Amino acid sequence: MLILRYWGRVSSLNPERLLYKTLIEDQKLIKMTTWHHKVSSLLSEYNLHSISLYLKYNKTSWDLKVKNNIQDHFQSKWEAKLKFSSKLSEYNTWVGCFGAKNYLNSTRLEHSDNLAKLRSGGCFLRIETGRHEALPREERLCPCCHKDVEHVLHFLLHCELYTSLRTKHFKLISNYININKDTMLKEVWNTNKMSILFGSSNNLQLNELVMAYAISCFRTRRNHLNLKKKNRFWTRHIT
Ligand SMILES: [Zn+2]
Image (cartoon, rainbow, N blue to C red; front, side):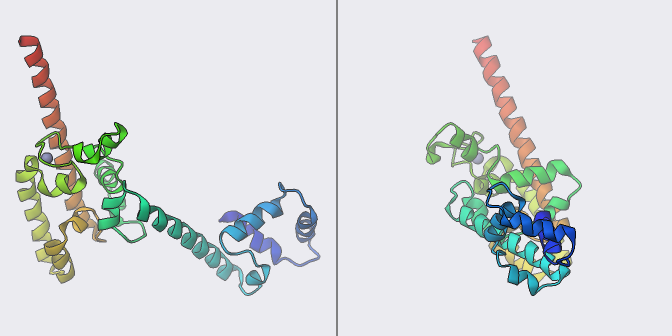
């Protein structure tokens, strides 16, 4: 973005300025490695290639135009990738819209990191670790209950290992929504819990409650699997 902003400044200089003359000389060179060539590629990539376009804008407008076009370009690529990514299918279902979510503003880094992993598919669940082992999707079973594929939906909403946690934390979330009398949030919580549990609301306090639930599930899972591992070890060595 900085290089394009700078190009705008230089292009609008008085033609008598040395820097402007340097730019013009640079444009005349046909080498692929010139600064002008690099800028031209960027202008073309972000649909800003017409110099006349710049002339319509002052400095502030040009900077804004550069920022918006780069964002549009990135968003288009992001949406195309999301559409065809099986890894991000859950993200696609419950997040959908482009933009930073405010759970990232949490000061509890372990909490926000855990939720970000769940949202992006880069997590510890069998749906993801089984992918690295080239295991068919239907065989990536939950190691805690063995009753379903361990995807995010199962982890956050259905796995029986977390039933008591779910009761406790869902009550806290419901209470918060009721106290705030936010009818839209209430509607989403009643009809599409995963959207809330995925941290997609723009309510940081609510997201803190959601993250507290997710991290509790994660710790319970880790303790449960460690205990199973220890039991297997002792069983092998005693028998
Ligand atoms: Zn389970």
